[in-house]
Length: 620
Image (cartoon, rainbow, N blue to C red; front, side, top):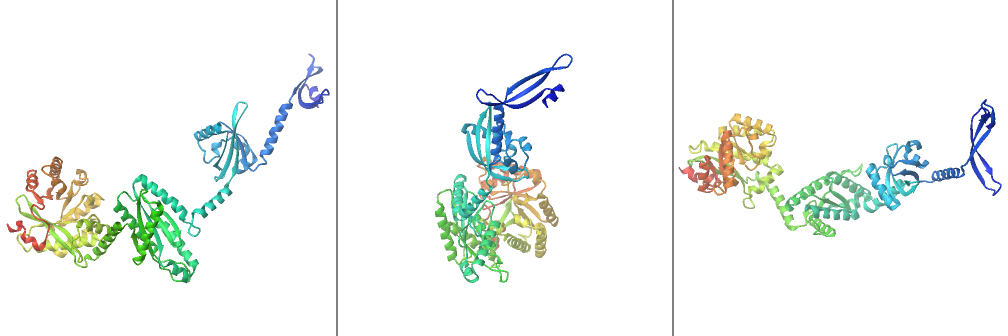
């Protein structure tokens, strides 16, 4: 073949083994044979140049051996440079990542590592590897089909021919992670309900105490116990009891906030840890009590535990305790909540009790007040008191109807105590209707006396009451039932009423204006009073809040505020009345600043209608 090629005038490159007899060594030579010709093209001979390529061949054989070895290990192997570019990948790397060798060699490490995805992350890793020379760590690799899987990587740094490289061996540890997760679940989660168990509860409760220490906010610990659970187990079997426990766990998860911790303490006891309840102790207690009551109601709903048996009705007892910071240990909190749980059991079950006696007393008092408030209308315990409103001449121009509550088993309850509770529970709706009806009936009664025939009655309306869709209709019914002149009725609204859904508020006010009813904006200046919404409202009057009247004319700030309110009211064409007038100096200052209507102790306290004829203004 060489002769044929050279006869054709072509050089020949080949390799052949040559043995040197002198020492018996064998070397591999690469030879290039080039034909020599004369000017006429005749072959005169051959020029042969031989080069020893023994070392290169040995290196090639070594690389082939390394490739063969790396393709017979279980780990995915890769060689990458300082920029993270792949220079070599073995067959296992191709299989695990679902890519061909050519495709992988065109990528970088950050293209397949699900945890190291940015160049700066790779550079940070490279710097750490260069310093340590070898590292073993866990990461996740992303396969071509979109899935990712956990790997354990052994990375080794080395330099060759002036370049730096990393040889990485990555082992798929999916199976190991699964076993670890099973062990973790057995150690930290209840096998039946899948909720965290007592061990994990202790850890998470400790974290909650640390978080409370940093934020200063209260948290709460609730222990729940299923009433008569042992009876259920004994009569219907443990399988049914287990199904109940699973259902209870599911209901707890559904009804708790995402940040709350729900655990199974053991048996039929569950624990809930509430965080972020604010920095006010009483408010935190109210929130915890509300959540506990919601949970109790949810767990008291019927359960379907067997196909062929009737639905099971169970109840739950709950013990609560508050925590703030780390003043109490985890064990101490559990003991406190447990004591409260026993108190709940001792109170007849199916209830919640606080550990803190003072706080429990406050919760009990609130619940008692709410229960009594629900019966107050039926028991005829409400009464309207009336505070006269006087003009600049000392003449009676009207009155404000003020609600008072006299429970049959105790003295008068302050409106500051029961009005917010009535609004929160929705009882303000029937109570507010009673106030409106009673006030209209009193206006009718005043028509019989020439001295009171033209008085105007101011009635307070709550936000919840005013925003009822049928509020206008209820006022119309009260007016019709009492058969009074609608102009004698004045409704007092607070800024919290008018700021919410201004368009709807304006519409309802105009409908009532059309009937003849007037409006007064109560507590003016204490909220967000501004011309931007005041000019839209069909108001007739504003009432200067007593907090501004109290210190005039001595306090310069209050003086300035009162004058500003008067100026704003004049610009809007509104009448002004001041409440809380207690001294002659206050009344004189208000008159000097063109305020011509007053209400306060200087003239008369709120009194029942039986004492109405005794007020000075009625005797002139």
